[in-house]
Image (cartoon, rainbow, N blue to C red; front, top):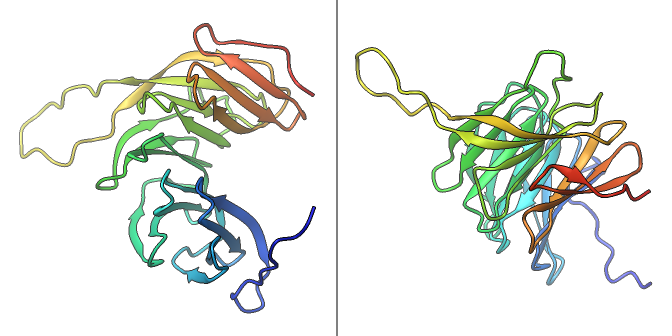
Length: 245
């Protein structure tokens, strides 16, 4: 296999610590260093832009389906939305009380979910950056960190959440309507809705590190864990096929 191009990060003496994102069209790639700086690379001509804004290292990133926007999650607890064309930070999404471990978009790039070390998953509306849903742990015995999450490509309100490092359980959440507000006064900004777990899928013997929906069959999902297995799940009943080692 031939190396097509060798690239060098323009971030001073800080080495790249991760390749954190690649867009589906092959037009852009992003890498990050330990200071929270990212480099946005052109897959066409190899040119680059340095993206600065996070105060701690970037832990995850995802491009919108067309590649025009990049969303990054950081150990500083924020998510930043960048223009791939200009490199400008267009929005900073705040709410998590811990490092953002995972970000995922729906198939149209209209909604995003994020999972963090504070034990919550948030769903964001990309149009205005508003948090529409906040999903928490089922019980206090679970490990706090949400290690990965994914939005159903057809149903943006359904989220797969890996909510524990210890037990490897994958939870499938469905939207729960917000209870009506009580009391008087002016109506403020709508509070995020909650969610309810409709399936808990057991099988992994350690932390679940990755969740991916099947691109054409959203009732099927694949998970990868620290136990070195890949599991394929049928969402209709929450059942799993034999693990792939």
